[in-house]
Length: 97
Image (cartoon, rainbow, N blue to C red):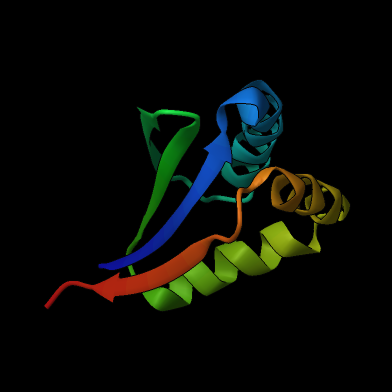
């Protein structure tokens, strides 16, 4: 199993904008065969967000992300996302052993 993890923070006052953008991203990602789980923790003026994508293999992930990235809507949605993220986001990859 291959797991893709994204970690980032959204300021409290941007949460609704982020949610609206992310709802569109979720539908689009599912359309291309992907799926992920989102965990949210509110802390003071921020929401800490963890997104976990589970795939059979890295090959499967790369196939899905290739289709997702080729969609014309993806670039605009990603720019919107980057404008809402506080500081930076990180991504990590894990595999089961």
